[in-house]
Image 1 (cartoon, rainbow, N blue to C red):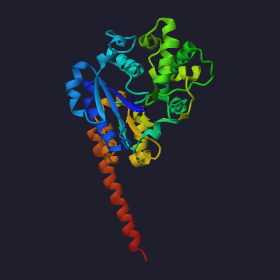
Image 2: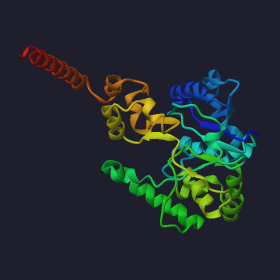
Image 3: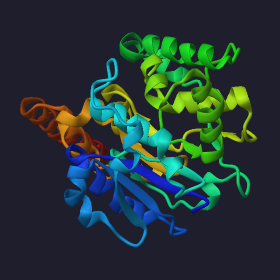
Length: 313
């Protein structure tokens, strides 16, 4: 059993994202950690080229006893099973702790055991309030309020009485010790499986986080998120326009995520693209042409002004 490994739950529709993520995994995997890639059985052949010494493919049928075959409330079958696999993966006995990484993530800095483990057998725990997302009006109206209500339901279910709501959107290190406690001490007494908890609130990372805060199963070594996530296009555009590069972001984060829930129609984005290339997916041809023309005019104006200054006595 690995002390710490990585877990990717993916499927054929995200293959291009997964290929990009695995390429970045190999580039930055300083300690040679193992990445387990779990996909639907029918998608194994498509993912076979990703297999390597440090990348192991697994069919999701190995956890079939927990999976659903019908939508789980608002969750489509595939999305529900993605959340279930993350919660149930510990039962395979392959890793004592595992870092959950999404297909649309890209590693941008070297990583190793010390990034994920606070003690020999205790991982770090990502716990944040994400208050900056409450500030953004569109995100607040579309997502924040409903998500906060769902997270409060999880708090109530586990009996965590805390005025603060601390969790994470993803990219958490899961401890098998905590998940075993969650299953045996929370789910089992209620006659629940993972899907029953997710039917109450479909946030797998928050079920883990709230149970850990309630049960104190392991010492909590809280840390900020591993991934810089652009949750909406305004957030991403701000960084592009300010000229903040991947190298800048890598000073604070291991991964970069342009959330595919909003960006999928824009195509697979290159995190290392320069400003013009990064802006292009967000703009129409007409808008792009207008920006190019404005840039040419501005450059010409600056040159004429500079020449005039040099010619002045």
